[in-house]
Length: 54
Image (cartoon, rainbow, N blue to C red):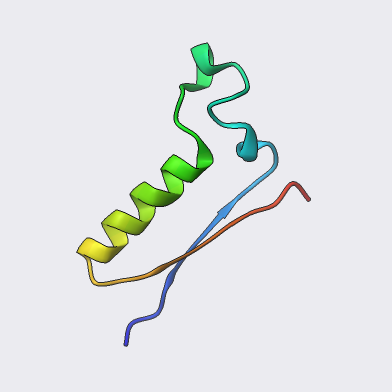
């Protein structure tokens, strides 16, 4: 079994898709998580996804 891929998203990334979508786009952090999980699955891997504002 392979080790998971860890993705740590930092401060304010929970606001993706909400805060200034004309600059940052309309994709949410959940959309990014899903893309990461799909790509990891295609490679036979798993993702541990976490976001923190601290």
